[in-house]
Image (tube, rainbow, N blue to C red; front, side, top):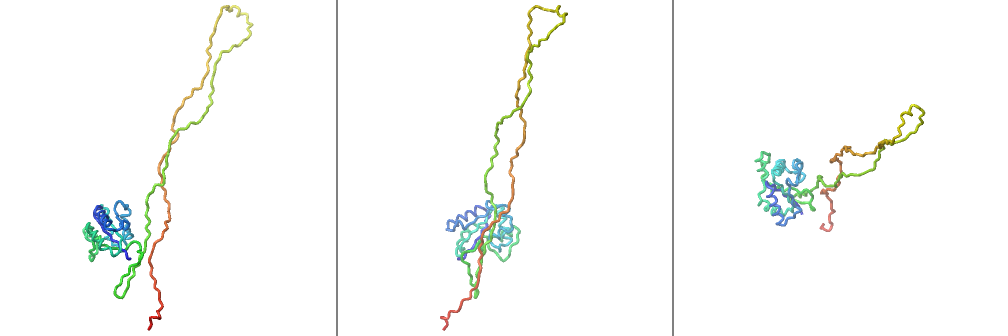
Length: 267
């Protein structure tokens, strides 16, 4: 069975979503329908000149690519549907109900170059599928038979995923510390010494007498002061690495086999 891809451009995202719902209600598989808009494409992807050829085939004209890009920039959408070749007319009728843009007409109104001979509206732009169908399509023209060969192309994109979280916590700990300090003490002490000077006899005082001496001692006094020892800066640092993506793509080939003549058919 041969497959085709229909591409329809709408100036409003709502129109494209209505067309997609109509296709699904008509029995077309959701997995075969793709809606490209500002929510599904990044700025880099939209402005990539080779994006539309990778998606829709190498025969996409420059003015068509320009209409796709400008439509998405202005809030529109590009709807694609992969379907059997026999279902193309039915799908066209559904898409046309929601008024897709005419690529050439829109290209002319936006001062873009468009081929004069073609007047196919965007919804009827039937392109070869991006991947090979299970059976190659064969077209017979007069005495010739044309066998179409399809091939897949590998497109590697990027998406950001969460790999984990880092939690930085500040908390207080206590640790023992010691310091030595010299303390001074003063106490009363008596010192006896012998006196032999006779002149001191006249100063003898026989009354009671009391002397008080204040004793002192130093004690350690602990105070604490706070100062900022260091700063810890928390930030994210990025790094790049090259990763090799390996996959397989399919490509159809053709070969010719010479069959021997069947002798039974020879009269």
